[in-house]
Length: 153
Ligand SMILES: [Zn+2]
Image (cartoon, rainbow, N blue to C red; front, top):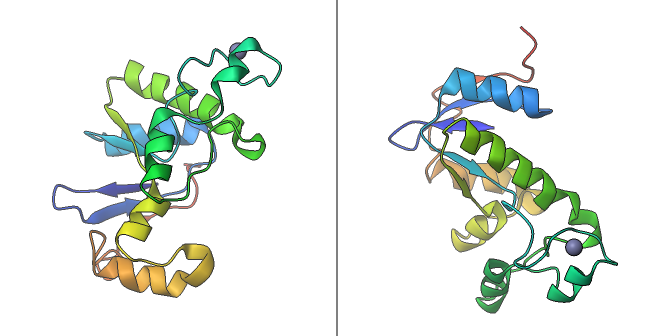
């Protein structure tokens, strides 16, 4: 998790291992907006993620995913077997944040990296860090953004 200030500088970094950690981070940072790398729900017209449900005929891609794929970017279908839990978790998380009055938006870090011509972390982590230093998170390491790896008080 990362918190950015009004100038898009990273001012805090942390690791969340569950909803309680996320709630603690929200209480600590009190964000004006939360960006999540998870879909906010199932593909359109899907009532569930079950493969044998009648709704399965509507597919495993959301309209936004089809648009991204049409633009030439790699998309992981929301309901592809390894990803099935992600939209369900995303929907729960969005609902929790919405109930807390925190605006939420979905982000696509990999696609953003592609657009910014930054390497993916699996391909070149050092290159990604160097590239990030030239973008919004410039100064993150130099300014010593507070960092925690645990929420245990
Ligand atoms: Zn269904």
